Length: 308
Image 1 (spheres, rainbow, N blue to C red):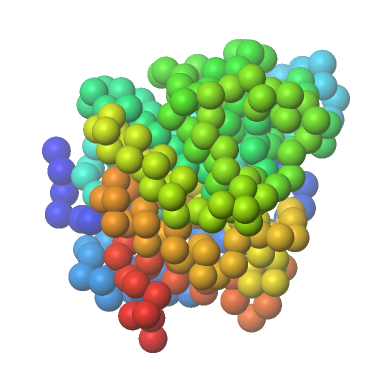
Image 2 (cartoon, rainbow, N blue to C red):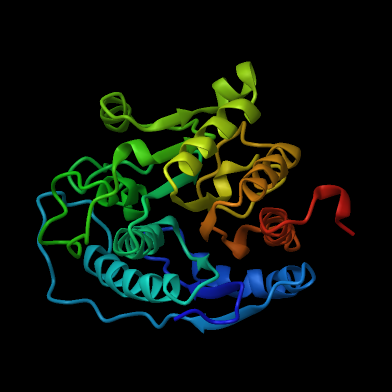
């Protein structure tokens, strides 16, 4: 049953995916920066569902990788977020998952994937990120689980018994990564064996982003698919978006990022959005939060020339 809402805002203050604290404040920073009012100014009807409560972890797990950080807490979050994401997918409108670190996407994408499969639709994911987040529990050297969601979502081995079972793994050929520029050795080797669409920053510098991004979006359209966009702050150049604990120089400029958002909006394919890794403690007078609000507005239809 659908509702009359065009978008659903849900705060996911998950911060246990990394050791650097501060992303727990991300949802409130996005609210303070005016995310809901920016969307309503476009004529959209939004509902803010507040923040999802932190779930209680289950029995303590033991893993051969001693570096793993907050494994049981992140697994509990994943299950809770997936359940809520699937419910929101069935409400109609576009869920906007406000984080929180990128570990939350293990749940948000899993929930959207479950809903898409039940609706007979393929889910495509566009990962806007400096990192591929394709580590398994065994290969991550840092132990930070915000570097593992794509491996989990695609059914790579080693998550069984630790993370909740997937309704169905996400096919690798339905994933696109844009803006990649920091990849560990184990991830690089694993990515080389996949059918993911990857357009890194060098490819953007050499060939631009319009034609390849349009080609990816056309694939989604031909398949009649849903598109889930996962936007990590470190996709952006740190000079314009400093509020992230994993800064990597050479990211997307403000103009490039707005262009990406406008192209996605024009495709009419958007079905869900993650806004992740915003750490207000590291921000400069709220500039990153405001930029994320502006980019979200572009994604929902505001052109950059229309901005106040």
